[in-house]
Length: 529
Image (cartoon, rainbow, N blue to C red; front, side):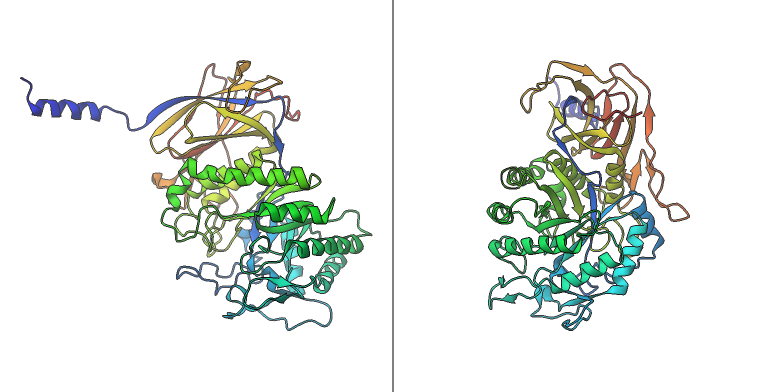
């Protein structure tokens, strides 16, 4: 009779021989004949906000001197970080923008710095943008190659209904007119003007009824047409810069009519508050990440049904609201959420995705204190360099913990695929097939008319230092990404692979991979050498 000790020893022996990482074979199909969507060339966008150092959440004050007003614009790392994108889109705006006075023109109300004010909107007084600062912003950001969006004060001239968050009355465009006039006189190029911040629907802190807001947008359009009538090009108008409320957004487009709103901007903070103890688990849960898909789809429906002349933008997204989650938003693990968001937004036809923030708060791409890039900065940079505007349908038959997105390669031949492995135990061995079927099958099914991709490829594997998900250091192909001794952004180089028949692409647990298939023949992609 076998003893219990012998059985126990045998079980331990079996368990010890089980590999720590499971293996799963996955086939990914890329439908290459037609695109399903197209982003702007400057899809990647980051924000600069108005928050002063006194902005605090959860007994932390993470903003320091990072605002539009007090940021050190001469910082070498900051300038190099922007230049690395060639043409990074930057949105200047945020919660306090509807309290900013532009210090230009006559008959102005008092123009002073933001101060703590208990009865003020978001606990602050009105603030001031002086023209020397506006000059400096335009000079530095333009020199760095940035494409600028500026958020206008949409509450100027309105009255607050007592004991409510509702503001009534027409928007007074006098101060905005003076700022825009000054901007034109200086030949500063503003790509787009946005009216207000988070005033739509129920609003955040303040709100404006859609009928009134639509009327104000028509007034802004007339103002832009008047002031830019001698210019070779006119800036776009963006609206409403708030959380998506389908009925409100639909009505806004119905009221304004064709060619008023060029970009419909909505905000996303789908991970909850920065003090939520479950944020890390949410980021690694594919089912949770998918909850936002319906919002992306509904925004696309709103554009199609009520504003086909317009386009959808994510105007602000930080994952966790109230300045982000310290130890999560500024670490490697956040890139799982961020890159998945970029992929989903692209699939659902969004032209631009603005990350809150470039610098400031816990969710910044750059460290607020020393300006060094956080992991998400490098994720954004890789996307910007590798993922072209053309989006290709990408399907696979594997686990939901493997996310896959494919675009035509940017500035190069072939296609670039983004793979995100949310599993903590499974290595995915990926075979990629080129579906040349002109009439692709229904979503979720893989065509039988496919070619196995066997050509050369370039791989960019992203992992955290020492395997710690909450590390602020990211490794590219096993090597730490860090600033050079001259404070330049490091070179982003792949590991290359020659043609390998039947070769698979391997992505390790809890890692991210960009891979360019150099020889992938996609009729939907522009011809490049």
